[in-house]
Length: 287
Image (cartoon, rainbow, N blue to C red; front, side, top):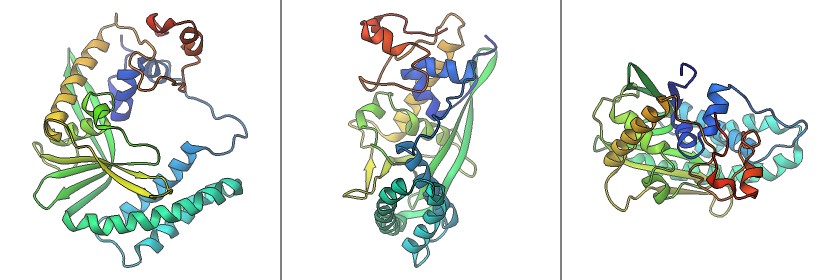
């Protein structure tokens, strides 16, 4: 019982909902995936390089964009792309995409900031949720939180892959942004008062193709970001209480978002074996 996690990030919660075995392997067994030897950089590495460059740019120019914003972002990007010097083919493929991203992003930034009075980049937050005789802590590092001219807030997440859909966010399969909104409403982010209202949650996709980027707000079919944030927090409280029970197993792929999913720990749960034999109805691994 004592080994069960009492602190998880908003990105972990998606695994907890869809694939609890990942939480078991990562936070209870404390297993860390090893990189394959001599593997060239892939999509995850590209995402890390681009995200780190944008993070530094946002932190550096949070208060005001420079006149030469695109040039500054390219300068910062060149520093982070230096990590790919040993992989010239990967760099030659990704750098032109980053140049297109830089041009799109800085133009989008100029238009976006007209309605933004304060910008918080890479901001950390945390709240405590009462749980039996103790507490469960939920943490987050939000890519971008904007204070808008009307006093409300917008929460944005950068994606170098596909954005989550409205249905995935609304039904709770992709709870990252709604849980970040819940942390904000509970006063879990520094300098943002408890009870603040969230006007918008959105993804900013940065892929470097045509178009190089896209702004993807989550326009809920019903309800507002505040109500969906409160609902996500209520669901999390139920989930945390359920897994605090030592009789609750950490099964694998209980709510898969995709039909084909092979994650970092699926081989330990023997996913390929039991899925090939129709074992989705079985326990599918776990404690």
